[in-house]
Every structure is written in C-alpha cells, then in structure tokens.
Length: 475
Picture (cartoon, rainbow, N blue to C red):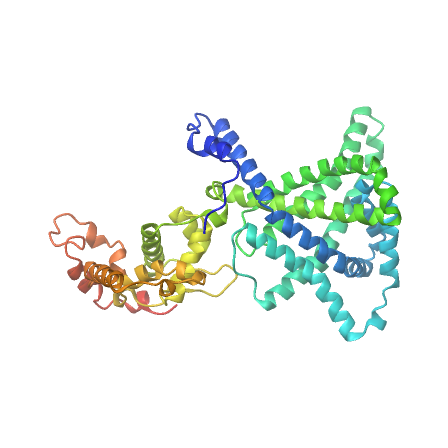
C-alpha cells in the first residue's frame, strides 16, 4: 500500500532535517515548541482528533442529562448543589443569550428525573450512559498516547466512578473556598486600597481559568492508561486552558454575529450552536492531551504513529535489544522495566515498541507482570532459549496485520532460496542463547582469549551452567 503524502513536507524538512543544532537553551526550547506546534497541527489536519471530538459530541448528547443529574445528586448530598447552575451558565457563556435558555432547559430535565420511577434497569442505564463518556475519552487519549491496552473491567468501574462522583465535589468545594475567601471581611477591607482592588478583581477572574487548567491537568494525568508525568500533564492543561479562553472569546463574537443561523434554523439555532460549542470543547481537550504526549515524548513529533515503519534489520535489533534490557534487569534482581522505561532506554517510538513486545509475548519469550503499571520479565530461562526465537518473532510482526507470506505465490526456485536463507541464519546463531545478550563482569576482563564474542558456543555452554535459585526463580 502506498503511504499517504506527508503533511507539509517543506516545513517538516526545515524543522528536522535542515535545522541546525541549537546553540543556546532558549533556541532549543524554541525549536522544540515549533516542532510541537507542527505535530499538533498535523494531528488536527489528519482528522483523527476531529473524529474523536465528533464521537464525543454524540456520546455527550446521549449522556448529558444523566451526567448532570449524577453530579447534581452528589453535590446535593454535600449541600453545595446551589453552585451547580451558575457554573453551568458560566461554561455556556460563549453561547451568548442562548446560554441562559440552554442552562434552564437542562436543569428542568434534571428536576424532572425521578429515580424511583426509573427502577433498577433505568438506574443501571443512567450510570452506563454517564460512564460511557469517560470511557470514550480514555479511548481517545489511548490513541493519542499510542497505548493499546485498556483498564481491567473492575478498574474501569472504580476509576470512572471516582471521576464522576469525587471530581464534582472537589471542583465545587474549590469554587466555594475561593468564593468565600474573596467575599470575606478581611478581603473587603483590603479592597479599600486601589492597587489591591485591582489585584483582587484580577484574582476573581483568574479563579475560573485556574479551575479549568486543574480539570484538564487532572484528566491528562489520570485517564491515559500509562504513566504520565505531572509536568507534561500541567503543560497540556495550561495550553488547553489558554486555548479554551481564547476560543470562548472568538465563539462569543461568532455567536453575536450569527444572526443568519437564527433566520435559517429558527428554534433549532440555539441547539446547533450548542453542538458546535461542544465539538470545540472536546477538540480543545484532545489538543491538550496531544501537547502533553509530545511534551513527554518529543521523539514522537517527527512522524505520526502510522508512518513509523522499521526495516527487517531494525526490527531484529529492536527484538534483541529489548530482550537484553529485560533480561539484564531480571537477572540483576531489579524491578521489571515498564514499556515506558524500555521506550526511554532504547530511544524508540512507542508504536513499534509495543508491536515488538506483543510479538515477543506471543512467541512465549516475554510476559507482563500484574499491576497498574506492569513491567516485563522473561517468560523462559535465557540460558535455555535459542536466540533465533527472538529473531523469528521480530520477522513475523508484519504477518500479524492480516496478511502473511504464505498468501504470496512463490515458485520452487524462490522457496529454495528462502530455505537457504533460513539455513544460513540458523547456522549463524547455532548454539547462541538469549543469555549471550547479557553483559557479565567476566566478559569485560582483559586477557580472556576465548571470549563470548570469539566463541559463541563456549559462551552458550557457560550460560547454561546452573545459576542461583534467587536469580532464576519465578517472580
């Protein structure tokens, strides 16, 4: 299949291939920022973020009332539900005069919802529709972060409910504390001084922005099923918060001048404008997630994930290097390296590394440990496992995409040459075990005339000697 044309090849070439090495820290930061902007614009132009945003709009429409009802019920239990409607109107403020109407309609739907009438099935559907939004967001974040594994079912239930139940309480509690602090007597006394008055007014306007940043940062840190650095999540939250504020001003100006929508769509105009604003909000959230990812993984900015292709030789090197890093940690008694640790250690993008780990796991060479941030350990003793098994696993990665070499018509001369290649490879690594990939202190001593590099058969025999139980025992 022919690869699609790269996005803005001239700019990409200037940012990566023809870019001179930065001579100062601020130039390096500027180059990194320009590369990140290019990568995010490329992702938006590619259409994936827009597709996820549109999907989230659809899910939000179905679950908006259950989400508000669930949050409102939790806040009512804590006695702070009266702050819900003003915050809802504040979030819809860019819709202009339609914000009041939409907020009141949504609150009317919530007031009419009677749990006693819904029954058990109705309550279960209520929770499911509310949880589906969080699940869709996690799926979108997983694609942005190049993560193909998801939370276990039990973890999904507990984590999603934590977001839906505890999140609103913390947010509105923070709003209450900030409002009470600004309205306190001591602050009012300080307002008599003009400079402090301006400062207090600025702080009052800054609180909503900070709450938006904290919300974005929390989602970027918590929802991706991988380890996200707090600094990267904060960078994504800050940029997404700034974009959200600017988008609010622009959208408010758009709504003010969108009289034609009302003339054309009549009563549906407010609904259409509301859907557009929802789509903009979800797109901003996903852009912030993309920024957080690129801040943590700058090596992934050069190419989109579907254009990272490794040659056969690169796959073989990646397979052996992965087995070496995992084996070294295991036999040294260290903690199992995670996928993220392997990515940083081997300097390889996440997409090909995850495919390699899946191939090695399916070949029975590696196994993932249990836990939230699972690591990788050998599935078989290295001293009893032939090195060719790792090379064979690397060569079969492409065959797991639904098309393998058995489907290609080959005449007898072709298969004969293939057989000779296989035999040559088998002879080249005959007697070599995975333990030969590991660095041992004895190998580094000078004067060892019969080293493992010169005599792989002897190295394999030495590696096959019994090792202490503490090193080879199953963890």
